Image 1 (cartoon, rainbow, N blue to C red):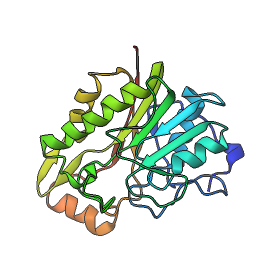
Image 2 (cartoon, rainbow, N blue to C red):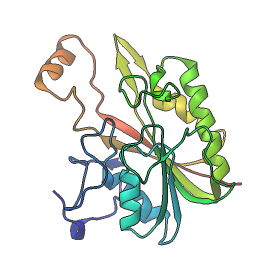
Image 3 (tube, helix red, strand yellow):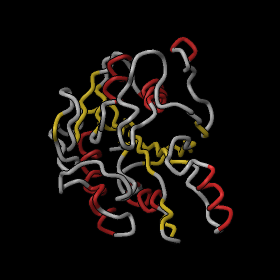
Image 4 (cartoon, rainbow, N blue to C red):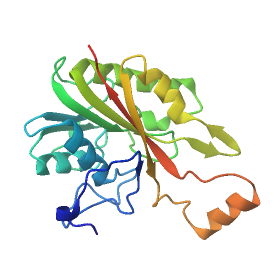
Length: 228
């Protein structure tokens, strides 16, 4: 496991994190469905925030953003429909209870489709397939809220992945990008390599070669800025 003193800010658009955590202190829960690698958040906060800034995560899951932000002396508010710890506020990300232009940075690692059970709450966007336009319509409601609470000239970042299931490919990332461009100025796209997905086994690699399809090897990290 990488020690904190060895952490270096990423300098390319290919990020490769073999583990969810860094250092000896836990950041979130590495057993949580869809948990975000802590070093992603560490990198983003190092680049786009300063001590005392307010960081908001509308879908914070097991609280990785909260733990990293506090460690870096940022203020932080984490919301989620599925509450697994007492410092997460139960809330639907389509209606964030914060004032306009109040956040210095927003990070979100949203559902990519209905492939993972995130919550038993019927409002969960993760119950909608990314093959449906409704999935993007609901995510756009989240986008509108992020644009509302984010201060002008501040940055937001969104993690998403494409889907290949039942011989059908869905360019989830591109479809979300089209919605994001309506509200934010693109800054960059980072590819995050995937190590721990359940399909990363010899069985699935052999199936991918035999039946001529590709396993998902990366996630998108969209980095965008609010101009007004």
